[in-house]
Image 1: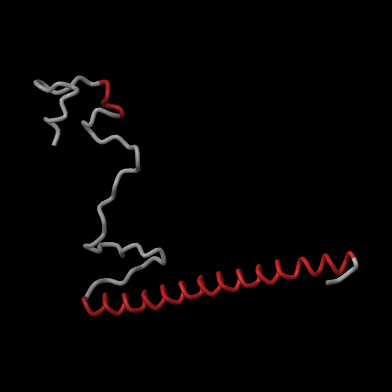
Image 2 (image 1 turned 60 degrees about the horizontal axis):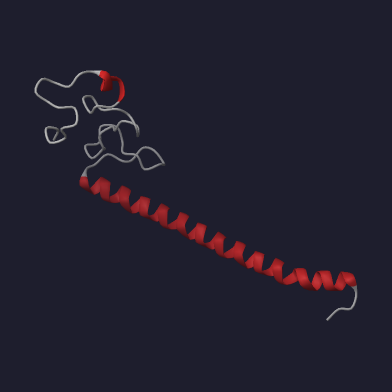
Length: 108
């Protein structure tokens, strides 16, 4: 064990630096492996879509191409009011004839 102040400082910092480098290398390998797996999966998916006669994906985010039948229906943003649900702009309107405002059974 070193007797000088600088020797002790270096001797105590080396394990921390080595562990930090090992941690960095492991994370780097995980991220690279994920990136390579995603690119190979994208290549396989493009090949399968071509075999099935589907249009290729256009954006890197994985969003379906325009006109793709498997595209999800556009949803309203979270918290947006749906017409007739008792929230939002129509909340002050009176309920339809024969319907109580707190009767949830009539809403399917």
